Image (cartoon, rainbow, N blue to C red; front, side, top):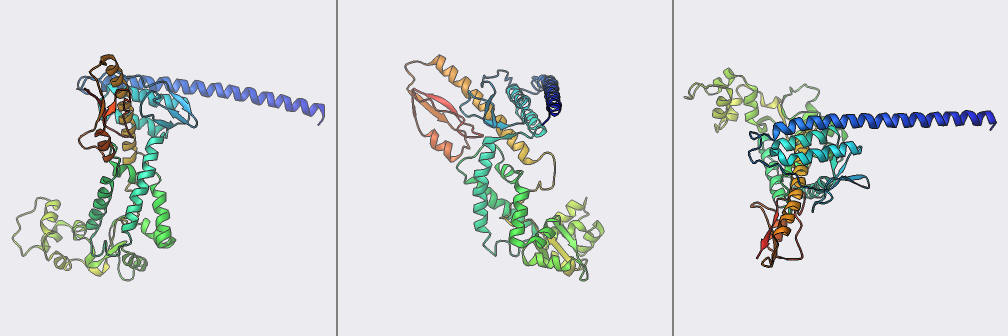
Length: 409
């Protein structure tokens, strides 16, 4: 390399370093400005949300949960809390914004606090480690239970779309109710609305039914379809019926067929009966659908051989109802609710212990955990124990825990 080449390389390298440092300063300046702006917006909303009308409980104190701390690839929000919360955020400004919002949540009405936390988490794609760990463990348990049921070929035989949805919902809720840990949230929305569900369901269908069938089924919204004999998609729909992914003819849900009819057609179905005049279509459907011969009556106005109904996914597929939708989902709200509730309970536990320490006297023999009325099995077992005076129990016990500590005299 000649001296001239070396000089040019040094000049270029120096210029690059100067440019990088300049850009770095500009980036941090812009992020700081953004942080200040968000803080100002948050203070305005806090003042509004913490008014006596919005906050009848009058909660205003903010416990000291500790300084934001970097732990590997995670940010620890509450190092002083008995139950630490870790988040993954793109930079420190974002992590501090969420922590500040959570600190504000102590003086804000609960539902508004969750909405504010959800907004910050969504806008910055924040992920909470403890929420993700719970979803990973308990969604796998739910999947395993549902997979064991899927081997029953008669589970959905002869059921309509509404019956299938009801059976699926009942099985899911029954399985969830048996979980040993029950966080304070709607667990079904948390597990079924998880962001990885769409990819999991897509892979599940491709593996079980083949790419072509999976693509066709997933492209069709649930509901009724009029498919004449000569329709190019007729064979594909008939294939779905053999796989219990669609219902054909008389097996289609009469309720959905009635929804597709107009009022004159519905009135014509029951013109021989003494029904009073219907106020609207909903009232007419609710009155007509329970008739024992409704399918025979419907055959007078529809050709059953041309009717198909795309059914909800089998109970073991766990396709989320939010697939294909962008923006907010049930999962987003429940995750924000868990983060908010757990952060608040951790802070309250800190304050509670400080208060107990100030009041401590010789008559105190130990401690016990007070579980909520509808607590999970894990917390119930813990509430039956008694802790020695030197062994102060830690609460929250798990993500979304509602337990607290009480004195034993």
